[in-house]
Amino acid sequence: MIKLRLFGIMGVMLLPAAFAQADDSANLYQKPVVELAPKTEPVVLSTGLLPTGHLFKPLLADPRWAHFSASYRNYQNNSFDGENIAAVSFGETIPIYRNNFGQSNVQWETGLQAGVFSDFNLGTKSKDLVNTDFIASLYASMRAGQFSAFARLYHQSSHLGDEFLLRKTNDKFHRVNLSYEGLDLKLSYELPFGVRFYGGGGGMFDREPSTLKPWLTQYGLEFRSPWRLDFAALRPVVAADFKNFEENNWHTDISARAGFEFENLQVLGRKLQILGEYFNGYSPSGQFYKEKVEYFGVGAHYHF
Image: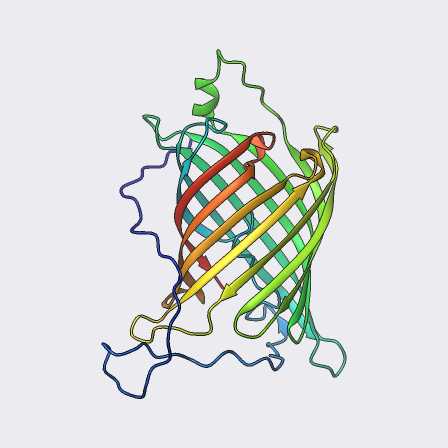
């Protein structure tokens, strides 16, 4: 039995803004200091066993990218269990081995990625656990300059909370034993000034229920500002992720996030991001995959 107590809601949602270049003065009340755009020359990371860094950057707006986060979400319809939901995730991408292709600067790595994603209904007395998704995968990635790729073989299973099931004993709620393996591939290209595009797709197998249609596509774009406010050490971040599932007649699920990344608030090399979020589409929470939902929220995320 898992219970979550929410002691307070995160602060005001931050939205990205444009920043002007500063002069050389150290006066903090003048225009913010602006860093130059990141260079586009290839960056070669360390090689060998358990290397540092990652060849493929995280997908900031993907609701099921494994990372540590806590969010408050306000649902705009009755398709989910309650309007006020706390969503938490625990996950990591762990490179096991990395090397170069021959004498080139093109690199490849392989490793593990795993995440747990849970939703809690804050409108119930005991803050009931509603749904938990478990995802575990073996992955392989590569990078050649600003181009990178990420492929994985993964397992996903979804489980309902005990308290949720007890409340639904006399209802007509239909529990689905959702579980499957999948294989997918994502390609990414990073442009100057912090702009990134990515896209890919995949399929599922060993599916339960067996009628679950297998194919999906995913694509999106991101902006990590090359400019920052020096006195606050933060950067604007904007991201949008789009998914289409054959199971849902290729309807487009939209996930958008925007806010700030704090460079001076790091844990194990992961930077804190405070992001406002919006989602419109079929629920990413496994047991509710046939339900259309819409929500607004704000959350804290740790990303590398």
